[in-house]
Every structure is written in structure tokens, then in C-alpha cells.
Length: 175
Image (cartoon, rainbow, N blue to C red):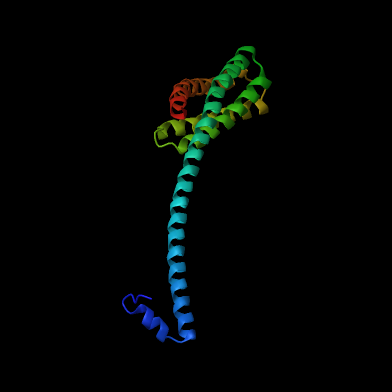
């Protein structure tokens, strides 16, 4: 057998237990190298998974917004109809629905760095106005629906118009 740098002679000079020790060391070094390689692959996979989760979360938020934003327009129409017909029940349902939807939209928009913070604050403020109007309608029969909901109707109309434009922006982002 050809002696490569004296390795064969060195190997033959070792006792059996020394040979086992050297073989064990080699296996350990190879195993350690493979473990490091797997850890690097795992780290890359973790980064890719995190990125995929973030993208999925962003897309889900966009999809939720694309469902919720048009509902604001529908709620605005119901609230206008309730005010015109002096329909307390419809007004209460519409105000509650608006309050919940506006808060959901505000929460979803908070995660989007491109949305104006003032808009989020307007959504939350209009949700509070709607809640106050609903409370007044529930506790008092002295005023007409139109009178009680006047401020809420104005805020809902303003928000609804703005959100109509957001729908187009979010549709482009989603595609």
C-alpha cells in the first residue's frame, strides 16, 4: 500500500484502542461539521418562514380591509335611511355596526406604514361618536333619529368617502 505522508505507517503503529479513538474523533469532527451545516440550513429556513408568515399576514390584512371598507358605505346608507325614516332600530343597529367595523379597520390600518395616522384617529373618534349616538337613542325617546345621529352621519360620510379611495389602493396592492 502506498504511504501517503506516512499516515499508513502511523496508523499501523497505533494499538487497536488508539485506532478506535482516532476513528471516533474523525466521526465526531465529521458529525460536528454536518451539524453546523444543518444549523445553517435551519437558520435560512427560519428566515424564509418568517418572511412568508409576514407576507401572509400582510395579505390577510389587505383581504380583511377589502371586505370591511365597502361595508362602511353600506352602513352609511343604512344610517341615512334610518335618519330619513326616523327608524330607531335601524339606526341603533347601523351605529353599532359602524362602531365595530370602524375599530376593526383602524386596527388593521395601524399595521400599514403608508396610512395616515390622523385617519386612524378619525376612525376611532367616529366610532366613539357612533357609540354615543347609539347610547342616546337607546336611553331617550325625546329627540328624533336625525337629530341624535347628525354628528355621527357627518363623520361616517366623511370616513366612508375616504375609505372608498382606499379600496382602490388596496386592490392594487393585493394584486
